[in-house]
Length: 121
Image 1 (cartoon, rainbow, N blue to C red):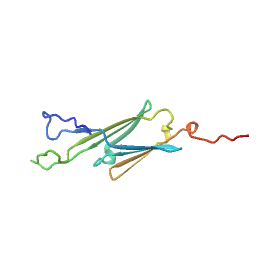
Image 2 (image 1 turned 60 degrees about the horizontal axis):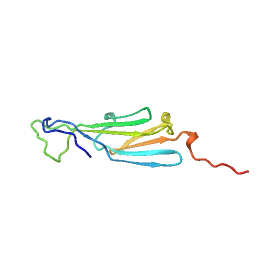
Image 3 (image 1 turned 90 degrees about the vertical axis):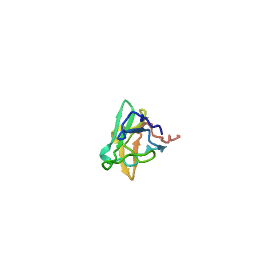
Image 4 (image 1 turned 30 degrees about the horizontal axis):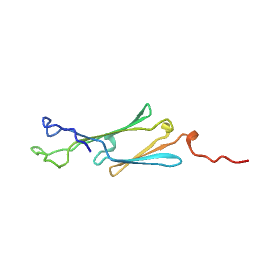
């Protein structure tokens, strides 16, 4: 993960990360799981434009007055991930759920690209 915070930014600066994710293709869908610890449902945006799936999430930490963040301690973060989903995904039926910092997406394939058996006569 790459941090894009500079020394000139305040202690309340937001660090930017590309979140860890896994993906798996099945005969029916592309399933993606994105790890975004600390982000709440209302702080996550999932959009599609021009066959690009974009996930943006923020994790904000409330610090006590006078508290100073030290290296390695929790900080505000912005997670950004862009995936090319291609034309085979039926973007009108995508499902998303969040459970314990894991965003799960099910991107169903269009019927015309799903594998099918061809009968031999």
